[in-house]
Image (cartoon, rainbow, N blue to C red; front, side, top):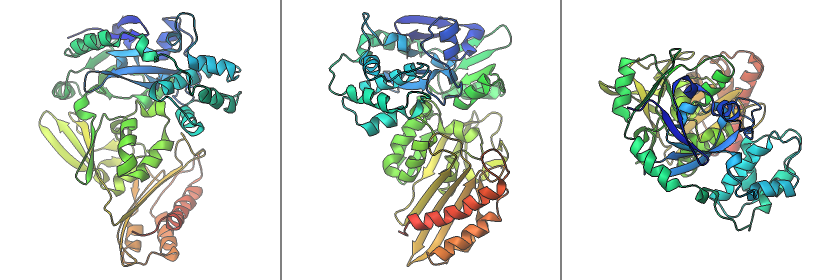
Length: 474
């Protein structure tokens, strides 16, 4: 068992032990290494100023690189990882093409956001040779600029088209890193700090389950995006942790017959790719609920266990009847997600269990699905109200209905009375108007900064009409 985490920072090999492993990457870079190119603005993963590239070992033992927000990545998550910062992308005194394009296209003013944009553009050049305005804007959705505006930055991205340049990743000895990492991956990690800090990285799921049974107080962390925000705001300091994002056996996404089986440690980028063809309604929601930097780290299991009543994925899981696989050293059991939550932030998970898989039935050919998210801004914002609808029809009449709303109670709310009001009725505006009105009597929203209780009821009612206007029965 190792007592240190090991990673590479650009070309430098790093070993970390003790309480230092519990620092956010951005904090460590700036104050321990003096590498201030990685900026910190929001400390919430919203602005992208702290964007870095991380290379993790994939299931085949090869480094796979993705951009993430350094402010909500802890050092303990970086074991057997290659970290590339903005300081590491230039070579021999020459700027990386993304840096040069930002200079020549006047893509920077105050400069706080610039390194993050540069890192996102550098990653884009690694993934594709040509780019359109649309693909550039999509790539930069997780980067905010408060003074320049985005036109010059998009022009910088377009200026990268047709520029021959050696790939950034070819500058690093990835083969040597992979060889070392694959050897080290055969050992578990345990780090103890002087003030009670405790970190475990199990080698496999069996070991994780044994740790869960022996030390149920350990906080299970995979992407840690929400926990990172809480930590940075002083609301929840992580001190005793078990890390599981590296467990590929619970991170796979695959289609089996008429279901998607999604490992709980699968990140949202992988889920996004899997749903584009199989469940486009969920794909559209995932595109706007988080930027790439967040999707590359955050997991579906974390979204479920975080138990937020405004979690954007939950209405879909509810109306499609997702089943959760809960695993312990004693075996596994399945729980319908509709029965999983017992109250606000409370759920049916035993102290010795780990959520390992989500079994998501895909809509049948005769089903119509609608998923809606209402927020103050369309992209990358916390929901005010969410709604999921899953209906089947025959000869113009509704034969089955599953409805669920978020942001209107302590948990996601199944709208059972509205479901009954739809079944047996014709597919018409009057039918959906009546069901929407009935739905408002089933919810108990609160008033907060995102909207009043009455406003939320109006939203739910109007979303029924929006669904009718946008969808036609299959």
